[in-house]
Length: 319
Image (cartoon, rainbow, N blue to C red):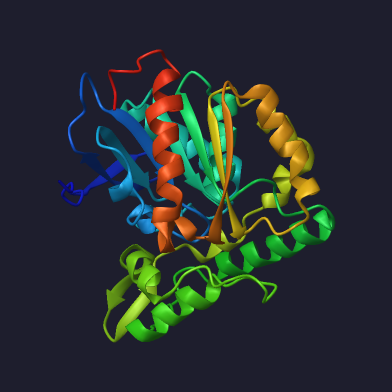
């Protein structure tokens, strides 16, 4: 008998400077004891709706919390002078989980969310039961760090100066088209990441209605990711200290388009450090968990029902 679609409830948690917002649901009833908690974190300029297609395919007995990162979706924007980077997001995420009482959970994360989640798992191993990484293996930067930081500083300054100005209004059709176009493979060779159906899932938290149409909700300043601050040296150090069970799902036409040997040091580090390490490849583009969740769900389900549960020796009590 098919399980009913999850019933999502909005969540807001104050983190000092503002609030992070998201949504939560319970998938069916746990077989015994408390449900297994799963915290879902989206990618860059996406939002908590990124997991709407995947979550219904996951096993019963999960309590899911999907959060909008700061500056994304319905979450508040950072104040003037503050920048967006993985460590900043981590600080806010840690505050939110502490205030919500989430002290033992699985991280399910895509792209930028996976970068943040690896740092979380390495810094706070006692809190993370297991880690699922969706299409993110290595920061996509190797050279030109000073030039990149200079450009991001310029962009951040420009966006700060423009705060308070009226934002462009789009029709729904225009907004959907921009969501699709912005997520296409930059080299022209990758498959489109999202189609219109997937864009419609993201749209309610990506834009808000105003007179005449829609305006984007995200903080324009969030375009400055400062991802090169988390370059290969830091990244390898972090991955080498992730000790919980890890599942990496890589999309064949996704973000990781470099030769396979480029990613082998990262995979080897996971194998050495993680209690359990699984690596799966699926057909699809970077947002395959949203556009074709049926390709991702089997690996995630197996990982949750075996490795994540066994992480604390409670094989029969959670799922």
